[in-house]
Structures are given as structure tokens and as C-alpha cells.
Length: 327
Length: 264
Image (cartoon, rainbow over all chains, first blue to last red; front, side, top):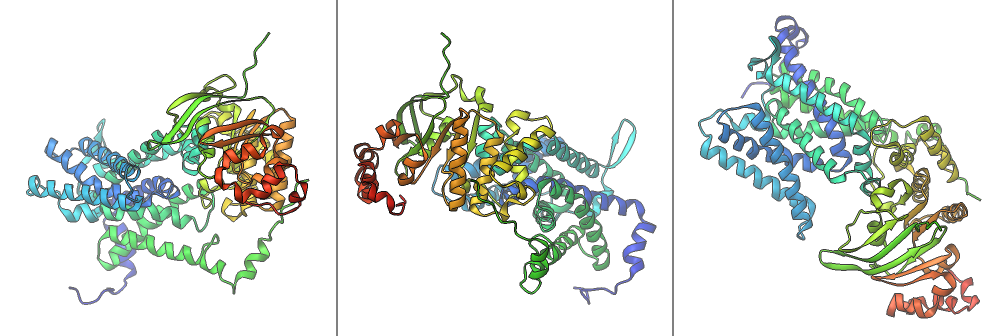
């Protein structure tokens, strides 16, 4: 236990030194944080819009057995095996949740609770039986260790060093998510908003749902080394809901992910430098703080704009257009 | 002689949810240019019928043909107005975005929305008097306005057959009038409309034909032939007691028509 919660704030050591003396590792940590938030935020917008935020939470937990089983089979931390294990676990989670919900009287939220705790527990059991002596420790799984990312082995492609492997992977996943959203934007939009219309237009509603869940699982597994399975959920939800206090259309919310990601990553890093604490934790605290700011001051539904005292400012600028009667 | 296939042909259609039958052996052919009201008690399978026609629900038996083709091949010829409560109105889209979705069937999945699509969407909003709202987030609209947006989206589909699930549910009087005008206008232009309706008392005024449904197809035909005490009794069973004035209406006792619309 240290003496004070807030160490003396020293601008130099919090903001300047990390970039001055240890530029490379600072840059890599911030970049990793940015990629994590970017990938999670982009996918998270659809997760939130579809009201699947809790499913995101469930998937993030049930990845554990997927990763553990992949680990047992390959007895190495091979990335492709872990990605496949995670994707299978992610899809299995959504399938099980829907199956229990549809084929019994269990309500959806209870079904989510049943599935993810069971799968997470299976993961815990597997790890404690077979992987006790292997480095896959619970702290890392739960909270991640983004600060250690610069120490990981480098990703070499065609002789070029592309930096630590987790950063290269996370960057690739973020890019993949963005490309998928651009290519399948309409299908994602219509299936998310109105599945009935989507089906009537001949769109593959179920395939899109499972495709999104696979992308979500891949994103979470790529991110979990940095921020862990608990904090990754924050990165899925915060960008969408925070931007929602500023913008009302999905494209704007998606563009809002980039600046928010930068703010979370930089803010979290420097907060962690100041308080000497977990970087991933500080990133989520920053995200939470920015959410509160948006909730109070956001022009679209923020508390200040809704309050009666300031209401006149709002109504003056946004006069109601009365609907005309046809005919 | 060239045979023109009818807009909608349903043969021996049976649908069930979890082994509980919802629709039994429905057989019907709807002719081009019909304005059909689908009525029946709660749980009669009205919405299920619409969803099965659109391929949203898979039937256990029988088939549906749209202009002589299976639904998949006639996608662009069918416009759909789902129940208003079926979507999340807090979804981050504007009124224009929703109406443009009606163009996606024509645009294909990859092509960008063209200027023409935007123009058509804008005209459709004009027709339901929602043009001034086109940039609004859909959550800021009243129930009637939301329903108009759905109608504009269906119009933007530029279809020949329209399927509407309770478009009159929970809308204000002005919107109700607007919808009736719109239905008439579409019918004049040779479109075929099949509208699920919950209020029997206004059905006679709004539609030309009735489809009486109660798990089975009780009757289908012109209003004079179907809006009879006998058939309504058969459709609504014992519940017709609450329909006494509607039954009176059917029997031609005009004084009952002056009174309020009993909601079913």
C-alpha cells in the first residue's frame, strides 16, 4: 500500500519524459491502445445498435475456454490456433444463447448469464488442470498487460520489422474490421435496424449476424492480451454511447471512434504514468470520464441540454415543424 | 392468349410455430389492382400470413407465388411495411436513411446510393408530408410520423405489390386520413395492396376487398360479399357479441355507423 493515492503531479515526468526518453515503447503502447479502441469501437457500434452489449460481454468471457483448448492442442501460444479457438468459442456462445432462449422459457438475459459463466468456468477448469505451469496467468487474461506489449517478439514480414507481434495483429484486425464495415455497410445497417425488411429484401440476416459475431470474437481475442477480457467490453461500448451524445447517425458515430480511441489511449497512458497504475485500467477510467462529460454536455440528449433551466436555449434553436395534414 | 400471373397466389399454406399451428391450408389468389384488408381476431395469423408471403417465416407446407415466381425472384416487386413496434426507434439513423433503405433492393448490395435514389426517396417523403423532417433522427418523431416514414420507405421500393402490417395501429387521425389517401392513390395506379387491419368498423370504408382470417381462410372477396354477419360471426366466433354494432353495420343498419369506432 503506497502512501498517497494521487502522487504529486509533475508535468515533465507525466507528459514529456515518456516521449523524450522512451519514445519507442511509449509510441508502441499508445499505438496498441489506439488500435484496440479503434477495432473494438467500430464493431462495438453495431453491437450497441443491435442491443447486444451483453452478448459482447458474454463472448469476451467465453473466449477463455476457446483459447485454453487451442493452447492444449497446440501446446504453444500460436496466434492462428488462438484466433480459431476464439472464433469458434465466440460463435458457440451466440448459438447457445439463442438456442436456450428459443427452445426454453429462459429469458435472453438469463440465457446470456448461463452460457458465459459456464463457458468461462470450463476455461478456468481446463487451465487449472492442464495449463497450471504455463504462462497464461489469470491477471493477464482478466486485465491484460498493455505495458508489456513492446517487449513481445517482433513481427517480421519479408525482412521488414513491423514492430511487436501483438501490435501488428491488432492493427491488422482493426483494418479488417473497418474494411468489413465499409464493404457490408448496407447489409449491417438494414439487418441491425429492421431484420424484417432485410429478409424481405433478400439479405442474409443470419449469416450477417454470425459474421458480425466472428468479427467480434476475433477483435476481442486480438485485444485481450492488451486489455484483458473484462476491460475489452468497455472499449466495445464506450465509443458508441459517448459519440451518441454528439451525433445521431451511424456513419458519424463510426467516424467518432477514431478521435475517441486516440483520447482513450493517450489519456489512459498519461493517467497511468501519473498514478503509476495499470494502463488498461487507466484507459477505461478515461473512457468513463469522457462518457460522463458527454452525458452532461453532449448536444444530443445531454443532461444540460435537457434541463428545464437551459431548455429555452434549446427550443429556440430547434423549433418544431408542425406536420401538415395530407389532403 | 398471354396469361398474366396474379400478384399473389397462395396454395394450401400451413404454418406453425413450435408445432403450434398458426395457419392451416390457406388458398387464395389476389388479382392485380386489389385493395385488400386482412382482418380477424388476435392470434388469427394475420401477421404470420404477411411474414410467410415475404419469406420471413418458413411454411410447413404449401407455397406462395408472387407474380408467378417464388419470392426470392420477385424481391424488387414487393414493398413491405412492418409493424411500427418491430424496430428500435432510438437507432442512429435519420428519416432519410430509413427511406433510402427502401432503395436497397433496387440498388443491389454493393452499388452506392445514387442521386436518383435520393431524389426518389425525397419525393416519397413529400408524398407523406414528411419532407421537412428528412434530417431528423427517427426517435424524435411521433407515432404517426414514424408510420409515415415507413410508408415513404415502402413507396421508395417502387413495387407492384405492397404488404402492410397494421399501418393504422396507434396513429393520429391526420395520419390515418393520409394513409387512406395513399392506399387509394396506389390502387388507382394499378398497385396491389394487402393490409393487415385491426379495426373491423373502419375496414369497410377503407378497403375494397376483405380477407377474413382465423387460422383458416374464412372468406376472401368483394366487400359486399364478405362483410356479412354470417361470415364475421364465423371469423370472430363468440367474440362477435362485442361486435354487435359492427354486425349491425353489416346488416345495413346505418344508425350504428354514426357511433364511434369500436376497437377490437
